[in-house]
Each structure stands twice: as C-alpha cells, then as structure tokens.
Image (cartoon, rainbow, N blue to C red; front, side, top):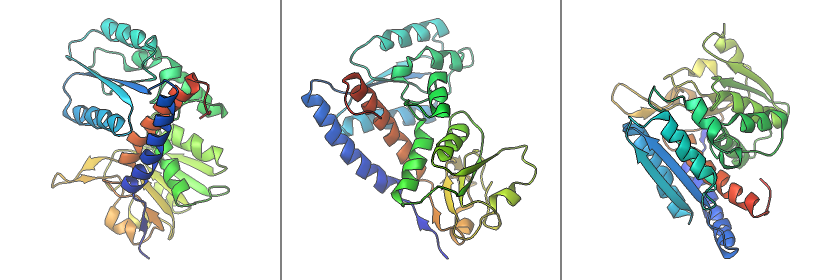
Length: 287
C-alpha cells in the first residue's frame, strides 16, 4: 500500500478561488474584509509567516495592515494598539504573531482582542464556543485539518481518532472538532504511557507535537488517515513534520506531506475566518 497524499497546496488554491468570489460579493455591498497583523520583534520565522499572511490577503482581494514593532515595545503599548484596532471599522480580524518577547504576557494580549475579531481562534470566548458547539472562530490549523478530511470525503462518525499533542492552538481544538463530527477521540501527550498501543487502534491520527518522527510506520494501522501538523528541520536543514514520512507512506491510506500539506491550509483558514467576520458584521451568511 502507498498512501494517497492530501495536497494542501491544491486544496488551498481551490478554497482561495472561492474566497475571492465571496470577497468580491462583499465589496459590491460596500465592505472590504480587513486583517491587521502585528509583529513584535525580529524573529525570522515570524517575519516569513506574517509576510505570507499579508500576501495571501492581497491574492484574494482583502485589505491587510502589517504593523511591526521593536522587541522593546511595552506590553501596555501593545494592548493599547490592540484596543484601537478593536474599534477600527475597517479591520475585521486581528492577529498578533506569536511568540512575543518574554516581557509581554501573550495570553493577556490574546484576551484583549475582541472575540468578534479573534480570527486566530485563540480567545477564551472562541475556545468556549468551540467546546459547546456554538458559532465562533475555529483555530486555523485544526480548521484546515478538518477541511482536508472533508476534501477526501472521509466519514468521521464512529471512527477512532488519536490526536498527539494537547496544545491550546492545535491539540485541544482538534479533538473538539473531531468530537463534533461524532468521532471517538483519544488525546495523547508526552506523559502517555503507551502511545503505540493507542495509535495502532486509530482510524485517524493527527500528529501535532513539534517533534520529528514521533509517529513511525510500526505505530500506524494499515489504511489509517495521518495528518502531520509538525514543522521541524532534519539534520540537513530540510523542512519535515512529526511523522516519519517515508515509512508511514507505505502503511497509511492517506497522508499529508510536509511541506505542502497542513501549512498552506492554516493561512487559508485565517482568510476564511476574516471573511466570515466581515460577513457577520454585514449580517450575511453565518459561519
């Protein structure tokens, strides 16, 4: 068996074409979806991420504002800027790029963002809405994973899904989204006693711990769907995920590559959330 790859680049292009049409519809109603991206400091990876987000906005016709600040920016000044953006009618989504300098409380910054503009889906209100199944913004990476499962027509009802990782950004919301689709979900982490015993039972595995080769071929049931959320570098400096790609590819039914898998979908779902924020403001279609 050789796994069928789920092409995140191709799916992103398809979704962004649809987004472009929806953006044009909003513009005809007098509203241009707007995203504000704030970068504090000069983290090279963060600089790449924010550039990609701004570029993606332009590609679908959205308005974006990139604000960059020195690492010495005070927490009070950052919170004040976020508050100002909360009240800016041209901005429908606010994203503060993480990580932040150590003197700034990231959670305090996240909680200052209006839940109506929390397009990253990190606010406690967004997490609560996801938990109880109400409308809100889903974190972009888990949202992208769900779109990838949808794209292959995979029925989750009654399936066993194992999520490796328990972060607030990926692991926990991923588990909630799978649960909403009637999957039986097991969350694993660094203290899980026998990870292999659990992953061998899984119909769907989401690897999201940021550790190379945390999932190997002998840990995967033949035909399972494997979504690799990891972003790491190997000995040669090449980008790789959490999954032993070459080994797992020979066992799994479906597999996402790194790069070109979940990564492009994360940015695409950020655009979706921003557009939906603008649509909600106009009283358009619900999320």
